[in-house]
Length: 590
Image (cartoon, rainbow, N blue to C red):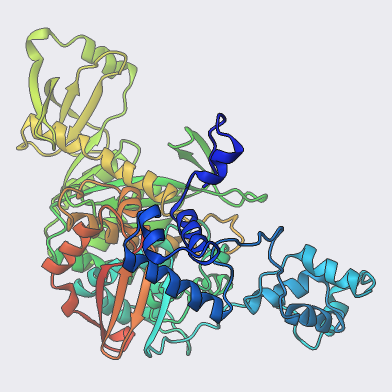
């Protein structure tokens, strides 16, 4: 260590000891150069006698071994040479003789673990006198070089997974968390027994699971297969080595009919009913699936999201207000038959249910008064909003204050809201008998709401609350359009919209089941569940008896691992994975 005191003299510089290494040098110099005894050296420099002997011994050994100077080292200026032995230079020359360019040579060296920049390779070629290569066409460039030119990596061909012992990483490890739900509810058996098509390579179960893998992963478009066509974790979900390519999805859906979708929906509805996930009430609503193509083969339908009518496919959905399960969909709705959709839903219900359904809730434009009469005569209760008119608004304005009463409508969070209402009865055109009419007084800038129902027994508070919950189905519809990405007809790969909506319903219900099983998250929508739990990578280890999935560290990971333990998910076996069980754990990395 150099003496940096600006007031020191040259004599002080040589006499002042600045480091232990400096002290050792002076002690050995005094012993050898000045001929002092070991006792004298130890006394002057504060060493013990044994330490002096050790210094002498080690110094002799280093000199005899020919090692570097122990006190003075020659500083080497500049970076160390990259190619000490000349092997790298020889490789560069060999590759250039095969007419490979500098970037191609660098790629080959990188593949061998040799770190050499393009600048270094270029300097070697210039020193050796190689001229610049002429510009070449791709076909010419690929035909030379003895086949050593790097090629683009191609995706594996889709086939049934072998489940041989293996290890691999995946960006889609999170969707594997849905496999215990699919197996425990028997959804895989329903898919196997459905009428959906299959091929000699991809089975019926693997086909539907491939669609679910993309929906569960929040894949925006089926045509964007670069993001998932080589991910083995997504393939494992479907019992395949990798998912099929984009064109397969369009080809598969082209053979699916409306009857196949209805049969599958009916089987799923029976499952939801068996699992007590369907109550005695169903919310129904329309949604418009936009069409953005140049042609205009579709009718104009009102889009609540865009607050205007646009060319679209009119679809209807049915939702259970208690569980949030979506149990019915139909994209064959046209203007000429949209008012009869509710009767078609009742026909669908009668063919698969046990008679639990008692009440239908829908919007004022959903059907006609004539169909309300048919619903009433079939023994079903209905709750809907009556369209406002000048006569009705005048009738509301003329109601005396004594007939209005204030009720507290309880919310799901235990809090209540005061609402001013007036209960009355009226008659409707094309409807046999009176109906109950409930006026809700306007608050602020809102206009009065008018609810009509044929349920004379329900309390005013429950009537208002029951209809207010109908807005949940509109929230679910909006969620499907934006999170599940209902495949638009302008997509590069077109999937039949009716089948796409059925897959969307099943995916939505899987997210609902997932959320319902996690304490504190049952109210969360699919996007929140995806971001908190499903969006995760991991490592997969396939052994002879089981498949171990190590999920990357995440704040909510302990919660889901505990839920899997409590539900005995480790005991489930998966036939499409060769009867192996699936085990989840936390990885050591995030």
